[in-house]
Image 1 (cartoon, rainbow, N blue to C red):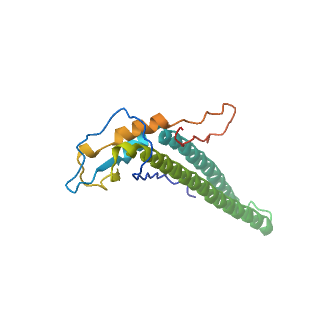
Image 2: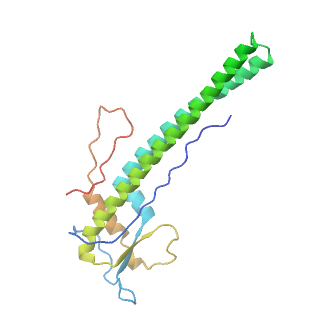
Image 3: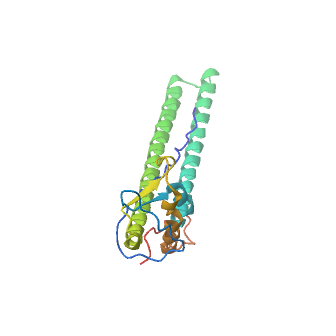
Length: 210
């Protein structure tokens, strides 16, 4: 009987450039950021954003707790099912059933237990997928709202997301990652945690502060 292991989470971030009112940042990128076509281009390191933006870190903890809870629940029920199967097989081998009907009844109960486990696994996976999608949407909205304000002063034509080697080479003078992270963290106001709430999935507010 296999263990039921919850799938790993994959979190993606998307970035665009727009215009609105811009807050002041701690660090400013180089002013020499025009390429040979005259376009102003910048990029943001996604990995750094995910590890240094407080909202992303907070929500990642929430998702990890949900994933661990689901995994533990499925493993416990999977172990119970495995034990039931082993018990049934042992009784069957040792002629432990008083009648064929008793054996068939226990076998049917095991089949229902397995179906219930599969249904539970599908439900928990769907709930986690929904929560992950909510996080991705909140992260995207938070970033887009910030970049609208940020780009009012910067006037970049394009702001790219750099994840892994999707950009094979980029001069560091176009890197505005730390500036963006500083600005996002200044605007981020986490929702107060409920001390009397036993749930592990307290939600954080990703909306920028007004």
